Length: 408
Image (cartoon, rainbow, N blue to C red; front, top):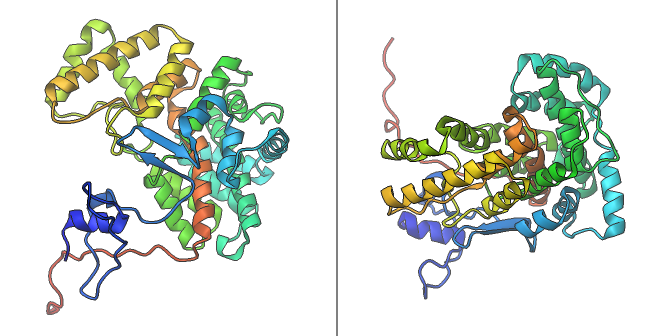
């Protein structure tokens, strides 16, 4: 059996050290499955043309374009078209695609009627989304992707992605004792999201800031929720099932729940004179500081750079305080953890930007989901072309069998 490190390189096709030839993918042997690192760290499990994260460079991309460039210069609808169709739209394609998506934002009447009960049963909008999304798919007769052609799968994915913001904002408002706000087809994806959430047409600067955030989080490699969606897609299940499973994975605090927690840390610190004592105490106790560190990036998260610039454009006391906290956290981490590379991640400034644009903290992770659902769907469509179920193995480490059955 090869070592774990060697096996990881073999499975991923990673070249290993400089001068070492790339290792081909190695199948399991008759002696048993190949041992891989915990959490599949560093293991490439399939090919994709959707995007990739290059952690050591601090760079990630959608198709052939820098994701940060797209966030700075393009709309959600443009990037959605890119991930689903493989190309950025021209002006005519953009107008047609945007109008088509706007027409899909309304949820079926039967689903809309049940939303108050869902909101009452699941006060957290992301929890309610699992039920509402499942119901929306069933109400629209979505069938297993195994039985559909490419065009039909894409149509199902378009409809559900367009309806997720409507469902999330309705669940939030119902949970606050307010009536849902119907979508407006004349507003862009980001502006419409804020409108449905607050009931007020947003300032253009806020709509654009949230759009940058949404584009920057549409996809990010084979994270837990994306992989979950692809595993479900490999079974041939309908698009709804794939997205509901992905939402469940995203709900975990180690995946999508950090933006509000990073902002909670700023609240706990309170004033600039308390930064060092608060941060030092937590580092010395071995606690994680939300908004810092990433399992893939070994340099600053490029999304953090983008959202820092966005926050600074919005300005205000919160931004000044956040940049002061960031500076001291990084300095103290370098002092107290000199053997580790820890940098600011996307959650730190994501929370700041969303707060400044008027989003309640309970909607931070749901807002993340409203964009990531597009990336999940692109992966579902790609996985559906494979037609092979994902079925790995596991090492049994329990009591050696067969043991004699105990007498009763």
